[in-house]
Image (cartoon, rainbow, N blue to C red):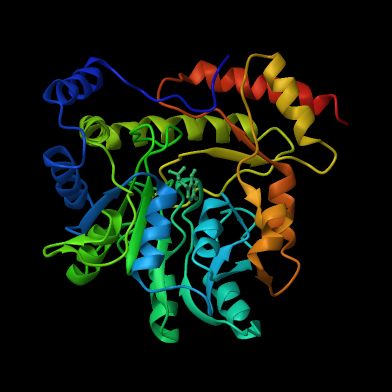
Length: 367
Ligand SMILES: Cc1ncc(COP(=O)(O)O)c(C=O)c1O
């Protein structure tokens, strides 16, 4: 089976983890601090706080910024549910805004309109654009909008470590940038995540909340345990220098997808500059049913899946008390017809040909 995603681990990763295990020191320490420094060097000198997952990164960032009941946070309606779950878990309200049909990202103008149309009773306090599947979501424009409206900008860059926009790494444009190291991401620590910030006070607060409320003078406040282990940090450190090579491999595969898929009746993702291609998602035509596509590709030895979810259609959204300004038709459509295809560094161009041939055969049968 050609997998949707497959981590690339070699002898160096295995030795790095084994070396930590031999020390018996497993809780955040020297490896974690080195990983934070090395990530920071790639993120324009930002202070980086590593945590146990991308979800923990989003939750902790919003918590440290003081968001909670009475607040609303702008979130794309088409994303992985963790984006809105982090808002809802703090008692705040996700304000779900429709995404664009080709980038699958929020557009600043639509967000501006949604904020103006929002009737409360909560107060909009933050913007949380997602760099969906590794495509930068115009963070400079969101930073301007956040400044203009007096809002926090928290970038959900879970899929986008290494992506750049206007010459800068994504995740460095707002108050906090959140990353995931889940196995479907180009850099993985099994589970894991990180938050990049430029404000030293915020960084201290994040470290305290990550570690049971512990600061310089003991247990100073409430907190949780959201730490990354030492062996996970060691694993991440080995992969970090390979990130650029990984991006180049993924871009070449994405280009081959574009060439071959041009002949099929599917909508392709826009080639956004600075993209890192964490996932390659196409949009099926109305007549093709996604579950049928997933099954047909599976029979051909190709794993496929939904790209992300339309949040307002999830059962959990009823409990989130989410708010929409309009119908969000594009998010509904992507939630129904988005099809993620295999994309990882262990594929070769022939694998792309095989995926496209299987998809072509399925679509020919849907006429
Ligand atoms: C956009 C987005 N945000 C947040 C997350 C959550 O990251 P994690 O799985 O590391 O908790 C993901 C995970 O896939 C994601 O795609």
